Amino acid sequence: MAQPGSDFPHTHLLSADQLQRNHLDCIFQRSDEYLEQLRLHGPDGFSRVLNGVVVVLAFIESSTRTRVSFEVAAKRLGAQTLNFQAGASSLSKGESLVDTMFTIESNHPDLIVVRHSAAGTPEFLAGRLQSGIINAGDGRRQHPTQGLLDAFALRNRIGSLQGVNICLIGDIYHSRVARSNFDILRTLGANVAACGPGTLMPDSLEALGVRVFHKLDEALEWADVANVLRIQRERMDVGLLPSLREFQRQFGISGRHMQQHPELLVMHPGPVNRGVELSAGVVEHKRSLVLEQVEAGVAIRMALLALISEARGLV
Ligand code: ASP
Image (tube, rainbow, N blue to C red):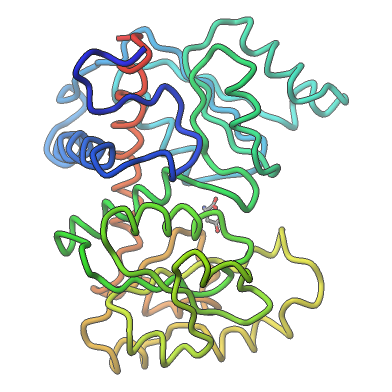
């Protein structure tokens, strides 16, 4: 139940397109506070607003940074976390996802952060379970906290995103990050584009108002910001790319591009295939936001855990 007068009514976070402009402002405002706490204070500097809240981290598809980030975020706010390991669970004995989740829920957790390779899993669970569901990535569909942290990190570097040209580059077709970025960036008033090999670009992009580039040089001429996506080898059918080397030659960002475009900012959600999407020098470049994105991720996830807990009347 949302608190009266609250700007954040959501009791689940399933998809970036459920977030309107005032919801984004509310998330960013709270994230500002938490980012300051993360930067300036030691372990005692945090308000333990989630004391007593139990958060299950159900990463049924693998993850490093998102899982660590959610766990740190929950613990900084005083919540207790429980890691559910799919490989060590009854899922590996053939139990269905919904039965496993009903079992988890009978332990009465408050929030479940879920990642699954099947698109739509978070909605499916939210319709059947009592706990609050937070989508930490479902197949190719959505990764709303990544979209939020990308926008938050960029806004912290440059201010308003209104009218800023942001191009997502690389494997758009398999990328849940791209879908969440498009939703959030457009709500914030940015102009969005995509650039990549034809086989890795969905047909629907232009209909969604996303400008399409097939040549990297043209995209970088247009863009203020390049958000470069990982080649999703685990979701790739054979034959979509001639080779990684060919991809790197046509779409990889190197020091030469950084020199040619002296204002260009570069982002990447990680994990980076170094030398494929970004050359090593670009990852560490002063106009790369890669580590700022990771730091922003903890603050964003703290804010969401707190706002959803408030909306559910848990705290
Ligand atoms: N970490 C992001 C995700 O889980 C990006 C990636 O894996 O390429 O979607």
